[in-house]
Amino acid sequence: MKMTEDIRDKPTIRHDDVIGLNFINASSPYFFRRHFRQGLRSHVMEILKRADVEVENNGTTVGGVRWFPRARPTHMLRIFRTRLETLAGALAEIERVKVVADYLGPEFIAASSEFLVDYHGPEGTGIMLCGVQAYVEGEILDPWNLLDAVDLLPTLYVGLHGEGERSDAHQARWINQARRKSAVFINKIKQMIAEVQHVPDLAGVGNLVVRKTGEIKLVDINNISPVAFTPHIMLDDKGYPVCDKSIEALSLIESKILGRPIDHREPIYRFFLDSDRKRQAALKEESFYRRRM
Image 1 (cartoon, one colour):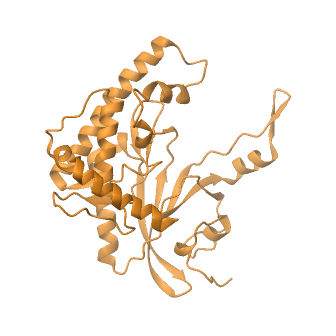
Image 2 (cartoon, rainbow, N blue to C red):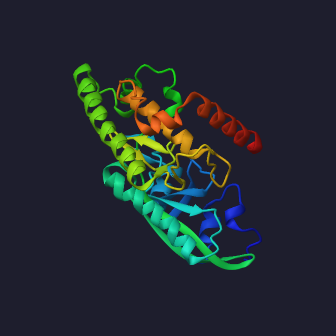
Image 3 (cartoon, rainbow, N blue to C red):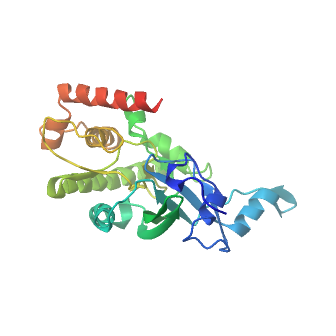
C-alpha cells in the first residue's frame, strides 16, 4: 500500500503505521502500541510481545479467577519527527545523546540505541533517526508539581510500593536512599553543564521517572540544549525556552527532593534564576503554549 502521508507529520500513529515502514519486519513477534507519553519531537511506541497482548485482550485464569494483565513493554521505539537533511546533521544528533549518556551513566538514563535508516516516504527517500530504548517502570517526576510541595518523596514512595511492602522504617530508608541518588543525578547534570555546556530537557512532563530503587531516570533524550550565558533566551526548534526551564526544573528537584535550599551563588542559578530573566523565560513559555492551542 502506497504511503500518502509522511509518518513524521502524523499527530499519532498505530501498529499498522509502524509495520508499514520499509525498515520494520511486518512478521515480527512484536506489537507496537502508542505510549501515553508522547513528545513533540518523536513518536513513542511500546514494543510488546504479541503473546502478552493476547493475554491482555483475552484474559487468563489463575486460581479459578479470570484476569486481564496489561502487557508490559520489552522496549520503547522512538521515531524522530525532525527531518535530517544530511548525514552529518544526523550524526550530530546522535553525538549529543551520547554525551548525555556518558555523563549520566546507565544508572540515570534509560539505555538507548539510536540508528539511522533510509526512510521511504511519500516524497521519496531520506534519512530518519530512530531509537530503541529500555523500558523504565516507575513514577513520573514532574518538576512543576514540586512548586508547592514540601517533600514529594513520601508520595512517590507510596506510588512505587505496594501495601505489603510499606512500613515507616522502610519508607525512611527508601527516602534516604532516593535523596543520595538524586544528589548524584543533580551533580552529574551540573558537571555536564559546566564541562560541555549542554543540558537535557528536564522540564517536560514525563521526561523523568523515579524508579522503585530510588534513582531518577531520564527517559526523554530527544531535546538536548546548549547552555550559553548570554542575555538572549535560546529557544529550541519548537520555540520552547528549554535551557532556562530545564535549569529552573533542576533547581526545583534540588530544593524539593533533597530538602535543602539551592545556592544562588552557583553560576547557573545566579544567571538563569535571575528574577528578570525568569520573567522573560515565562513569557517565551506562554507564547509557546499559545501557538500550540
